[in-house]
Length: 480
Image 1 (cartoon, rainbow, N blue to C red):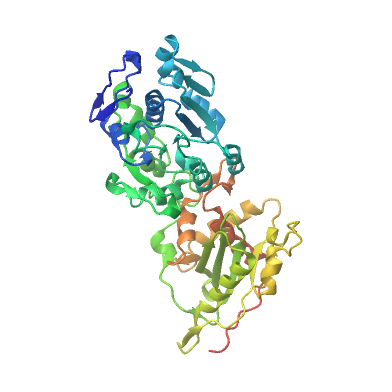
Image 2 (cartoon, rainbow, N blue to C red):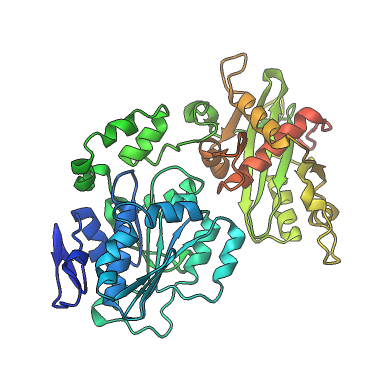
């Protein structure tokens, strides 16, 4: 695969005889689609065994040979994953580029492959969101991300900003494709939800979509590949799929083998979640119920606010409203919160419905009361001056595990057979978050702090946990 054009089932090769025969890779039909695609932002995969990592390595070598001075960056989330996947074993980089090394056309180190035409393939990891700062000013002509669902949206979108051509002269046959991003991945992982939203939903049929400017502006495509699309795997190891099917977590099997994005492997509340039981249409809140709210404050990260109503008679909570937005200054967040307070529909004992006129109280992450060192009042204090009436929700040793335990309890069935926590259908983010939030691999009794939707989980559980430890004044609705 060298300065060539692809066709289904193989490669039409160029006349560059300086490339050893062993470097002329053959692609399976689904892999060939990636090479032929006009898309410039491609997500390939959806299941285990689809030949994802090998494809990224093969394409990186192909393009690096075909385009002089090409800067290729390939990422995995952690360094051990990067090395074990791409630099050791069969079909790893050392094995794939060995023919080039043998003829003096390539130099190989642990994390870099340099070709004699000036192209370079660099291997990198980006474990934490702060690590993306290392790539300020770096120029990616070709960005490859292996197991995209192990990354947060912030990491991906920040790395994408480094994708540009600069002064690179791209041969005419590739001019429409560069700069280029190719990612791989399976269902599950901390980035499951955002990858599904961005690439899988709306990407059926492998259609190519021009994304809006605020979503990157690139030509995006999802190439859905299953184990059957990689016959080499099954030829070399015909019992591989049986071993995967033997996994005890059947949700994981469905995601791994069928590319089923409706399930999330390793999700903390997957077994307890029943969408039909836990989600309902909205209705006016009886004035005998208590209403309060809870917030996980943020600016770069989203501010997440949830309004909760308590039906004391049935010992049941309802999550009745939601706000989930980043980039909000304190006064902007306060304005939206207070407007949502007033928009809640309530009903009296005679069935009369009106908007809420009672001033509501709530809890917010105690960090919102911290001194930022800028001389300005803390964010929570600024909001309280405008009428939000936030109280700090303190964090203490074991509080994350305690909040997780409480959420388990509330998702369970109550005395009347219905869940003790039900969500209005309009609370989109928390309905996504509860069945998909992952466990912390280091502390299985806690949520994963790196999960994309952790802010929604935090705000909800701040409110539920605070309710049991302290008391709010009864919210009597007036003006009805």
